[in-house]
Length: 243
Image 1: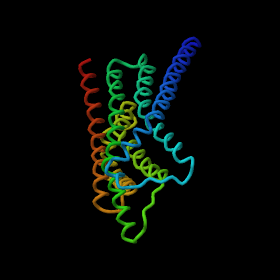
Image 2: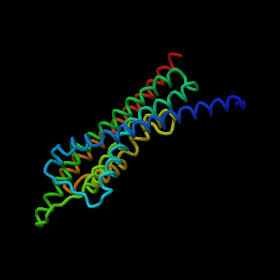
Image 3: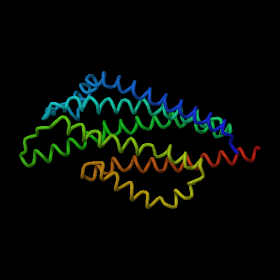
Image 4: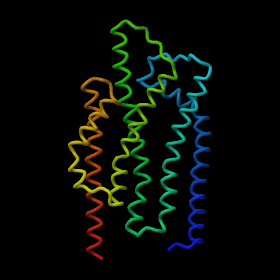
């Protein structure tokens, strides 16, 4: 049974880790706010936005856009720090094998977030803008885009994709906890494919090519998740035999 002194030490350590994460978040938010104008200009020069005139319909549109951009930057910077602090906090209670496995969660999770953001920005979002512009032109509409709506659409694409790309990390973590295994993942493969197809349809523009281009990476991520789950259990079993 854990003594009161040990409990107090754990709470003190947890408080320390939370403070570090909050400090990094606030600092990266401030840096993100400072860099927002430059980042927004870079986005404006990309193919998906270069032919679109941004308009503001409220005095607060600009400042809110800065805040949204800064928030995205802060989340990207804080995520690996938060994962690292979690690993440091739980490290004393882990075996050597578990510790070596979990330490890869930090770079893997951050890399997958960047992949999700990049895929959404360079593939999905341009397809969506092109499709919607084509529809607007077909009905003779004059395209006048509010900058706030433009970036709301962009963030609504990037956020779910960055979360979806965490699938292998989440699967590996749940496998370590013994909640899921490769057999269970394979058993629900068809149902999961159906859910991923619906998710890809909701994220992408309503045309078959876009659906396929978005859904295939999601399905591949699920297959990669099955591979990681099986790899972990095989390695764990091998170490158990050697012991």
